[in-house]
Every structure is written in C-alpha cells, then in structure tokens.
Length: 162
Image (cartoon, rainbow, N blue to C red; front, top):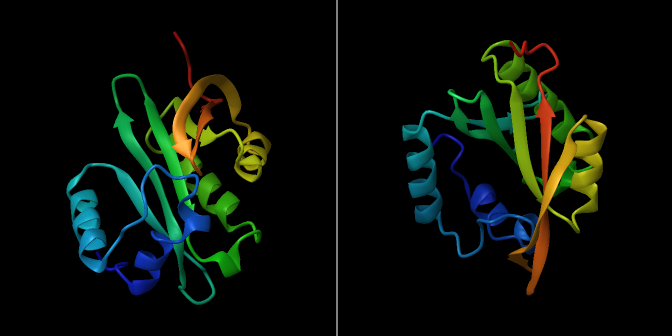
C-alpha cells in the first residue's frame, strides 16, 4: 500500500504501459488502493522495483501464483516509469527475483505469457534464457485485434529430477 501514488494510477491508465497487459485502464486512486490491498492479503511475491540511487519507484514485479506442489510460478513485470525504460532495470529486477525463486524457494520452473507482437519483451526473455513452450492462438484482445500469446519458461538449472 505504501506504493499507492498518482504516478502508479497514471501508469495503470497509460495506453503505452497497459497495451500488453491483461489489466489496466479505467484505474482510479480507489481502484488501485483496492487492488494493492488484495495483493497484500495474498501469499505471493509482489514487489516494488526501486532505483538504488534514490529510491524512485520504477514499477512492480510479481511471481503469482506459487504452485508449491509442482514447483512452478508465473512471472510478471511492469516498468511504470517510462523515463527509465531501456536502462536494464527490468533485467536486473527480473534476474534478482528469478535467483531468489530458484535459490531460496526451490522453484523449478518459471513461466510467463507475452503478446507475440511485443518484440522487446520477447527479446528480453529469450536473452535471459526463457524458451518458448507454445502459443495460444488469437487468445487475447490487444489494440482491437485478437493476438497470439507466446508461453515461455525458464527452468532452474540446479533442480534435481529424481
């Protein structure tokens, strides 16, 4: 809740920000407050991304839901502050939470879904070692068109399958 701000509300309404997200649009301060309260009550990893130098809030990263039985989790990230895009912060935050999930939580597989036309995200995920597992055809509505969703995964290299 401490990250509730007008900036965050603006991010959730920014067409450039939310065009590839399943949520967003029509956010108010109250809607964001309700969302953050719900997140705080769940047993998930939902973390703010801050700039190390000055603590500026850049966005959020999540691993939700954590499936303890199967050892897998779904990844998501939103870099809200556009002025900081392209500076490597998404990669750094992602690598940090991935390492935490693999090393501390013993997660064996991290999955994600990305709109097929989001080439910047696909490039980032591939460069981080994610591989494509499949495609959901014409799955979600983005910019007025039904778009494919690429499903990707990253496996814990230290996980022992026995």
